[in-house]
Amino acid sequence: MPKLHSPFTFAAVVAIPLVLIGCNPSGQQGVGGADGGMPPPEVAVITVKAKAEPVELEYTGQTAGSRETEVRARVTGIIQKRLFTEGTVVAAGTPLFQIDPANFQTQVNSTDAAVAVAQARVNQTSRDNSRLVPLIAEKAISQKEFDDSKSALESAEASLKQANAQAAEAKLNLSYTQVTAPIGGVTGTAAKSDGNLVTASDSLLTTIVQTNPMYVNFSVSESDLLRLNQQLKSGQLSVPGKRAANGSLGFSVSVRLADGSVYPRAGKLNFASEKVNPQTGSFDVRAELPNPDGALRPGQFVRVMLGGASRANTLSVPQRAVIDSPFGKMVFVVNAENKLEPRPVELDGWTKGDWIVTKGIKDGDRVLVEGFIKAHDPGMLVKPVPFVAAK
Image (cartoon, rainbow, N blue to C red; front, side, top):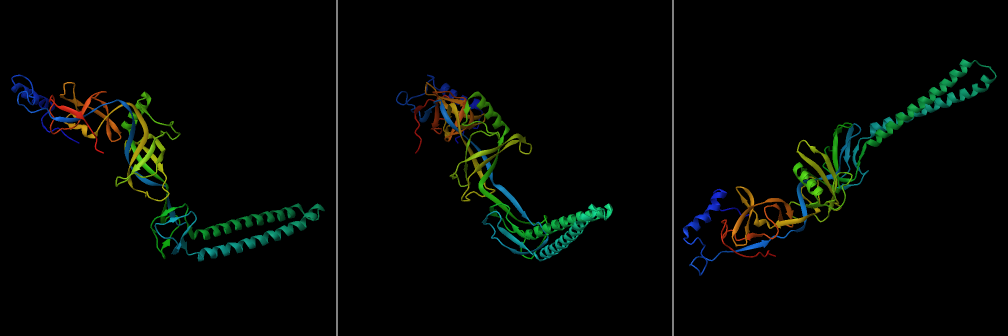
C-alpha cells in the first residue's frame, strides 16, 4: 500500500505547494508550452459510484472434529494386542484393543455356577411350598410353618436375581476386554502398547476424531458484532435468511487454506454464542463444513469467509488508492480543477478486493489510484485519465 513520502506533519505537506506558488510571481503553476514549465503529470483515477455491493467478512479460525472421543479401558488388565492401524478411519464398534480375558472368563464361569445353585434353591423351595398349600387349607399345619415356607421361596428367588445380576456384570466385564470404537472416525496414536497394564477409566488408549462434517471455530469481536447489528437494524446491511434458533444469521461460509487456496465445499454457521467469552473478549462462533474426503484435518488454521451479505449505496476504492498517513487512512481526490485534495477516510471491510469507504468521499469523486510517485502533493495540478485494472 503506498505511503506518503514526506515524514513531516500533514500541515507541512500542505504547505509545500504554497511555498512553490510563492516563488512564482504570477501565482500560477507552469504548463508545458506556456512558460516553459513541466506539463502536469498524468495520473490514473476512478470515479466513485455508489452501488449495492456484496460484503465479505473474514476471520481467523481453526478446524476441529465434529466429535472427538477419548478411548479408555473400562476394566483392569494386560493388553494382549492392538487391533487397529493408527491414523486410519474406523467404524463405530470396530475392535481396537484386546485385554487379557482369562480372569474375566473365570468370573463368568463362577457367577454362572452361582446362578445354577440359586436356581436349584428356588426350585426346591418352590416344591416345598407347593406341598404345604393343600395342608394349610385343611389346617393340617400351622400358619407360621406355611409363612416360613413362603418366605424361604421369596428369599431363594431374591438370591437368584442377585446371582443373575452378578453373572450379567461378569459377562459385561468380559465384553469390555475387547475395546471397541465408540464412534466412527480417524484414530490417533496408541497410548498403550502390547503387554502394558491398564486400569479401568484411568488409562487412555487412543483418541477418535470424526472429521465429516468438520467444525471451524472462530471469534467475532464485540465491536464487529455491534457494528453488524447496527447496520442490520438501519437497513444498510442485508443478510439472506432469518436469524436461526442458535442466534446465527444466514451467512454462507467458505474457508481459505494456508496455501491461499479456497476449500471447494461451502458450509454454514451452526453455533453463535449469546455471551462474550471472558478469556478473549469476543463471541465464539462455529461453522460446519462437509469433509467427505478428509481434506481438512483437525487443528488447521484457516481464514473463515462469511458471504451472502450486501450493503446498499456502497462506495469502494481499490486497495492501492488508500494511503497510510500519520493521521490514519486517506485518499487523494482530483477536484474539478484537476488538483489533488487529501481526504481522510474511514474503512469498513472488503468487497471484491476493494476497500469499502464509509466516510471521506462521496458519489462522483475522482480518486487517485496510480501515479503517487509523480503526484503526491496536496494542491498539485494533474492530468487525470481513467484507471484500467490489469487483467
